[in-house]
Length: 618
Image (spheres, rainbow, N blue to C red):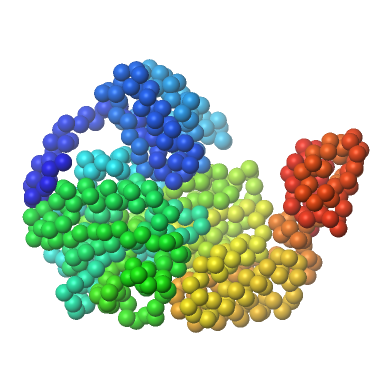
């Protein structure tokens, strides 16, 4: 890889690179995303490498480990190009058959393709799989196309062309104007207009300015930013370089949590590659502009996703938020004007610069432009990473992309916006997903977590779970958040234990009002959302817990009772062997009995009974 001295030099290299590549050359891309890695994607890639070598196909078939291919529920995913054949649930043991049938003989193996549950038809090609229909890939567009460790792959896919366009005659003001006209809003949760933030920072007095990529993704069930950092790191860097040019920053930082070692590794490699190629450092591409990027690793505190807490952490202090104003755009890192945007926001910038702000603004809704990446998880059949135009409805997300509720169950609610988001009930399934619509029903966009729940979820317990998380993650600096999350958690725990009282509901509402009004940062202000939304839409569940001492969803253990049906019990002793409290009595081949005084309500008896003899009720 040469060091590019000018934009012409880079374009000449790109031209030679493209001319040396055969677009019809067979490629095997093994998904290396967050959903596939834990179930053996590295072993699958190694098996392909060994099999291709054994058959003498090394020079004829290109093997790559790609970023996330989206459909995590069907891991390990393998993509075959140029045909765009999408295989799923591939194991290392399957590789010899796949190489023989698909790569050598050109045959599609049905058992590795998506099987349509409605008509049983086989969907071999990515474009035919329902999960991918309705998506519009901008941020995720290169994820199953490139090797994230290869700068050549990124360049061949059009990478750094947006930067060339910016350097080729666009002033910093023109770049900011384009971002403003695109309508891009920050994808980290608050939804603040990106171009406005950049303009504030550029206009702030001072010769030294900084730029930060917030990769501190801590929401339970969320892995959008992680997937982008691991699967397309150069897109993040390119966006940051363009942003730095626009605001006049000389130094950038990527703040990423230590729990993302692969993201750290891929980002570090991308930074080294870009620096060696003259895309970072002094006089980028002969433009006269200089900018460099460093990685700053965080310890994994959820509150450090808040920008002032993140800055404090980077400066070596305790990761606690600070009052605003002044905002970081005026006085941020080490007191200097600083722009902070999250990973997804930066990854949108190259596409906006390449295609133009009008192109981007034509996607989405009036006040929410472009696309949004979501991690669709929970009780849906097709969990994974999706990118859809703003305004896509919850119904489309859950049923068209997500494939409906797992096991044929009934949709109950979806929580958007991470632990600080609200729980949206089924009467809003046709709600368009955008900043304003979600806020109107008591939730938030957040960074893009979307947790789908079915009728087996207890909404009181859901609120308790998220309050437990937020209480643990509160930095404790301000009293409303520190004490408010503590008391809300105590009340919710009392209710789920069967000790709730009628006074608890108005008390929680009063606490939520105080926290929302007085908390120092967004963590405390939005921590009330899980409570208020479940109280608003699922109040009858709270009342059942309090008045009847029952959990309708059969989730809250202290409110459950396990019994044995003597008519169906065969006396197999399976429950007796598994009971940790020795609460089940009975002889072999005789009906058993559960001692309610000894029963700890762990549910093991119900789980191991093959005859449906153990009943659970509330």
